[in-house]
Amino acid sequence: MTTHCSKPPEWIPALIAAPPVGAVAVSMPDSPAPLPTITIAATDPLLAAELQLPLLTDPAAPGFTHLLISTDDRLELRELASDAPGPVYVDFLGGTAAHRRRFGGGRNQPLARAVGLKSNATPSVIDATAGLGGDAFVLACLGCTVRLVERSPIIAVLLRDGLRRAMQDPVIGPLVKERLSLHLADGRDFLSRLDETQRPDVVYLDPMYPHRRKTALVGKEMRLLRQIAGADLDAPALLEAALTCARRRVVVKRPRLAPILIGPPPTLNIIAPNTRFDVYLRHHD
Ligand SMILES: C[S@@+](CC[C@H](N)C(=O)[O-])C[C@H]1O[C@@H](n2cnc3c(N)ncnc32)[C@H](O)[C@@H]1O
Image (cartoon, helix red, strand yellow):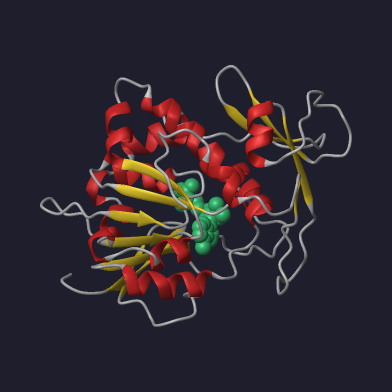
């Protein structure tokens, strides 16, 4: 099931009707080291019902590792440990997103070159691993229409909240409404159901990379995404679906020194200081 993010939120419950209720087991069968199970509650009754999470009004109540909090301004996910980093939320108006929009390098930045943005070409994109929407927002600011696909309901509601707030903004609101739509789905299913007229020029993938070193410096957003979503060990299957679906190219974002995803070799890559974009050209490019 898919929906545009500006529609009412009835799209979430149907997709998460199955357990878990309040507990998200993130360890995967063949992951190198099982991750701890995390337990999430929500402070807002509507959201708790929508996500089938326990409703918790006292943040100090024991038994949960994370809390989805609806403040007056936004939806936040907070880790409850005493040494936890600050809350995670989606903010397209300030912080990193605003900085990337103003100073990211426009169509010359590696992400833009990887998707094939040229002065006379603005491809349509499906971001099949949307996460907190940072990369998709950059592409939308550069003119692309981007369908964001995210399979984690918790991450999807954070993203939906950020998109809704961005839509109210007089400067970026129009472009967010016009160019970004959110779909709660597994990317593989989503891509395989598209008919000929719905296929995008580009499928963009940024699967979670399994960090094994405890000392690895990871931003709090990425750390949290990994806690919620786990390592995306099925990324090769997503790549296969993307290669079948994209009209022009598939782009896979990887840490700069990471191996390529299992599958056919990329046609070319674009290197940024910490990141590598593997580009798989299809037709007409
Ligand atoms: C590294 S994050 C993406 C970060 C994103 N590029 C950004 O700028 O915020 C990976 C995200 O992809 C999602 N994901 C991974 N595999 C997916 C799939 N097959 N379908 C949908 N979402 C997927 C994960 O749940 C996670 O939220």
